[in-house]
Structures are given as C-alpha cells and as structure tokens.
Image (tube, rainbow, N blue to C red; front, side, top):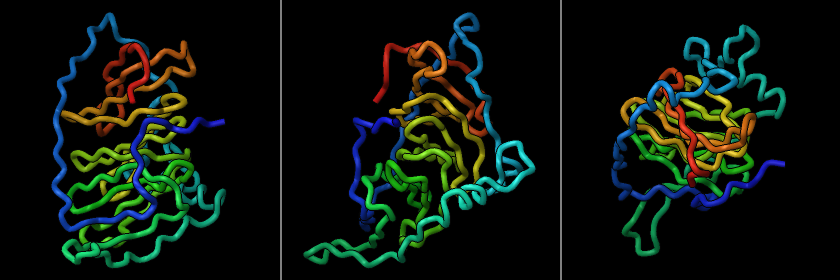
Length: 233
C-alpha cells in the first residue's frame, strides 16, 4: 500500500489566484560534483525519454501514445470547469478561482512566465497548467503514477515527482521530456539550479539507504549521487 506523503504544506481544493501574486524568487544553491571514486552506478531503470518531444509520445516506443493508453485504462480525463470571478469581502482584491476535480488536498502551485502549474492532489493522476491572469486551462497531463507534487519551474522545464516512484520533466507547454523511476516513497521535492536537477530518494531496490542525486535538466543524465543520512522533507 502506498504511504501518504507527510510533511508537505497543502492548499485547499479551490485554487484562488489573487491579483497581487508576486514574481517567483529563486536561489541557486552551490553543488559540487562527487569525485570519481565516490560516484556510484547509474540509477536503474535508465532514463525514459519522450519521442520527438510529442506531448503524447511514449518512451522509446512506436506503440500507442502514453496519454492515449492512460485514457483507455482509466477513462476520460476529469474535466475542469471554467474559472469563476473572485473578490475579497471588501472588494479590494479581485482575481479568479477554479475547482480542481477530485476535492483532494493540493500541493503548492508554481507561478512562472504567466502560467500557474499545479498537480491534481495526492491520489490523482493529473497535472495542470492555467493562464495566471485569466484562469483559463492551458493544458492537462496525465501521470502513470499517482500523487504529483508541487512543481519547480526553470528554463522552460517543469519538474515534479509522484508519491511513490517517478521523477517527471515536462516543458512549460506540457510536452514530456523525460522521466525516471527513483524509489518508493518519494517524500522530497526536486530542486533546480544551473541547468541541473537535484533529488533525494530512497534506494528501495537496493540497500534502502537514501541518496541525493544530480541530473542534467534537459536530458535526465545522472551526473553524480551520494549517500545521505536520511530523508529530506
């Protein structure tokens, strides 16, 4: 049975975009690559790449598109109602609101480049992008594993992981770039800096110790990984 992710801050099921949302501020932590002697074997299974950047293309396959297969397995994706106007009681703050299907607790949204990115909540298989100004749904992506976390966005890439296994990378237009199975459960969010992505995870197919790994942002190639004392939440 999958474990419920703990230690994350959730928002309510209705996402409210207020007109005074500030610009996202990010730092770039300094990361040093491990010396060759300390590097370990590449994570297994290997990076799964999307074919030709197509939003529906499966990894390394000429078969039916992944999103099409998921629709056949689970039925149509849940529909999202049009955004409704929002105003504070005193009328000073105005914006929009939209209800995410499923009525689940939601992870914190990310707002970058005029778009709002948010998962459908733990237990869902949906990830969404909305126009940050109008609330219009721009695209909807279905995950193979449930529970997409809060996203991190940088250099045209959107990264998030699912609750029990996978790290996923999309473009800000909703096209899959790569994904990778890491371990179960994944209780940390990814971090991006300097064209690299860092992620902590349990080596659940090996010694069950925790690792911190660094990947190339756009290819998913593992650059290094190190043992760490425990989970990072």
